[in-house]
Length: 95
Image (cartoon, rainbow, N blue to C red; front, top):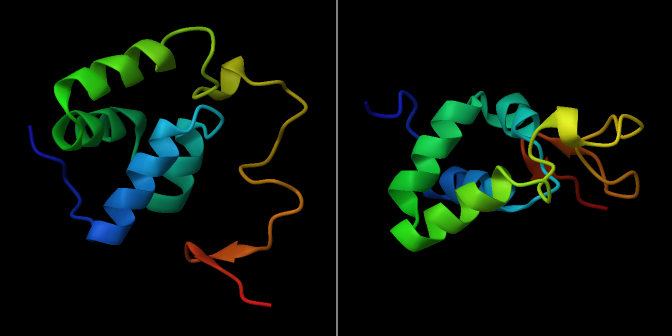
């Protein structure tokens, strides 16, 4: 089954980067790009080497990763650092 939405190279790169980060939950990717967890997994499978994908999936499903909000500290209610500048339309605001 193919991914339903087409992304630019920059968007795809950002989704992969966010998915690779342990502290970025799948909900943040859904919020910013409208891509649910199952689609992110398909993107990762299609765009990473097989060994890298297996390593990523193993890490996501372990207790180390906080990719799911239920595994995060309940006091964390944000997708970005409190010191990070506002993001609108996936573009970081300039000073």
